[in-house]
Length: 185
Image (cartoon, rainbow, N blue to C red; front, side):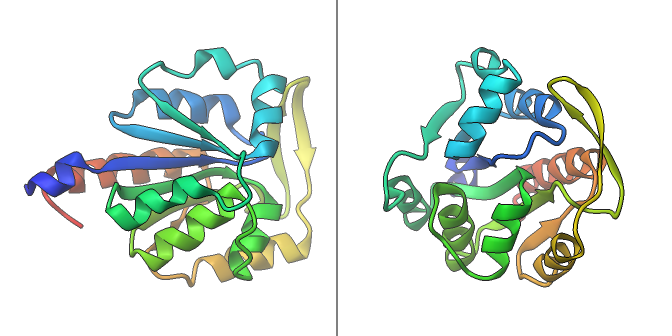
């Protein structure tokens, strides 16, 4: 394994989706060498789920507090081996599909593509009917056709592994971690 891969980190992006949110925070906390990028909407979700204090102290947190998303410059310095966009709101998916990079989350996706960094992307709207845990309990969700179409378009992006369930997200992260340990790129 090359030293450069060992020094690189995971870049994890939280957006305004609450879909599998607490489970996602648990996954983030289990990873080594991870930077957490929190959109403005994700900050609100963190408060709703009362999980803000439960993010590991080993995780470096970047908040969406600059118009130019200056922290994305780390991609050009080769700081990351993988971006994880999870969970991802339909708003973020749509912006990513259409090349709009006007927030921390969408800028990270754009820069990861420009810097050829692998991305694992978990959209919240992946089926015509879903059940998801809201702060008040389990709710039924019926994604719009446009949301489902955007997920399909996202699957065509290079270096982007779109996963459609939390189980698949966990599996993709485990597989990527094993690949990195074997010096895969």
